[in-house]
Length: 473
Image (cartoon, rainbow, N blue to C red):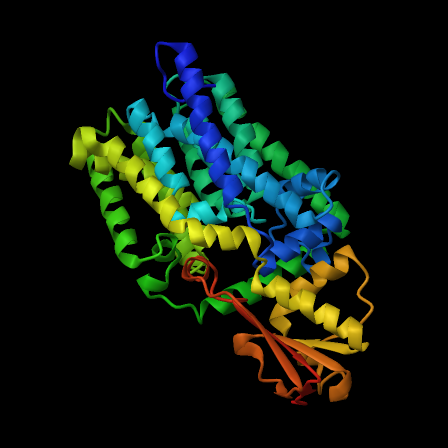
C-alpha cells in the first residue's frame, strides 16, 4: 500500500516507507511513561477482568478495544501498556485511511499533507499513545468513510466498509450517529438490494454478536441496563457543571491556544466553501462534512463533556482534510512546504514536554505508588479521595494491596476515622478537605503547561499526607 500515487511504484513505496517510519518514530517519542486518567485505569482493570457490574469498563463497554487489550496483554505484563501499544499502532496506520479519504477531494500530495496536519496537531501528538479507545476508533471511522464513499464502490466495497464500521463501533460505540448516517447514505446510493444488504448485514451481525457476548458475561440484560443507568446519571449530571467557554473547550485546548484553534476552524470553513461550490465533483467530501463530521460535532458538543480534548480526535481527523484545502486555496504551491514547516516547528516546540511525558509518570500514578509504599512501611490505613478510586482499583487488579483502603466518603458514614498515626491520606488538589492535619506532606504535580493544557484538568496535583488526621463529616 502506497500513499503518493506516483507513476514510479518503487519510488512511491520508498517515500511511503520513509514517511510512515518518521511518523512511527514521533509516536514512539511521544509514548507516555504511565497512564494519566481514570478511564485508562478502568480500561486496564477490564483487560485484567471484564466486569460491567463494577464499571470495568463503564458503558458502552468497548468490547473490541478491551478484547485487543487482552490479546496484547498475553505478551505484555502491564494491561494499560498493552492498550497503549494498540493505540500506537493505530496512530501510525491511520495515515493510510486518512490519505484514501482525503484523496476524494484533494490531490495526493495535499491528501498526504492533510494527514500530517492531523497527526501533528498537539492533541493528536500527545494522545496517540494513550490507553483510550479514541485513536483506534478514529482510524476505523476514517477507514469506514474511505471505503464506503469510493466512487467505484461495489458489493465488495459495501461489505468491507460494513465490516470496518462494525470494528469502529465495537471499539467506541459513541460514533454510532455518524456511522449510521453514512450507512444510510451508502444504502440509498447502492445499485442493488444485494449491495444494500452487504452495507447493513456485516455491521449488524458484528454488533449483535459482540454485545451478545457482553450480555452473557454480565448475566443478562438487567445488569447492563442498571450499569447504563448509573453511568448516564453520572455522565449527564457532570455536564451541568461543564465550562462552556470556547477557551476551555476540547477543540481550543487541542491546539493549545484558542487563536490557533480559531485559525484552524477558519481554514476548515474556507475548505468547506471550496467543496460546496463544486459539490457535484466533490460529492464524497460533502457527505463527509454533513454525515460524518456533522454528527460527531453534535455528539461531542451536545451529549459529551466538550472540554475533554480526546473527544475531538474524530473532528480533528475529518476537519484536517478541509483545513488543508483551505490552506491550498490561500497559499497555492506553498501549501505543502508551509504545512511541513509548521509540523516540524510543533514537534520541536513540544520536545521538552514530550521528554517529560516519556520519562516521568503522571502525578496520579506517582502519588498512588508513593501512598502504597508509605502505607506499607507504616502498616497504615490508606484514605483516598473518591476521585482516585480508579487508580486504586487498577493497582488492586494487578496485585494484592495489603493495606486497607478507605474512601473519604466512607469516613463518618460507614466507618470511624482511623487514628492519625496509622493513616496515610492521598488526594487531588481540589479534594483534600477531608484532611485536617498531617505530620508529613509530599506533593506530586505536573508543572508542564503543554501536558496540563492537554489533560482533562484533573489529577495534575496529588498530595500524599502521612500521619493524617481525617475529618469525620
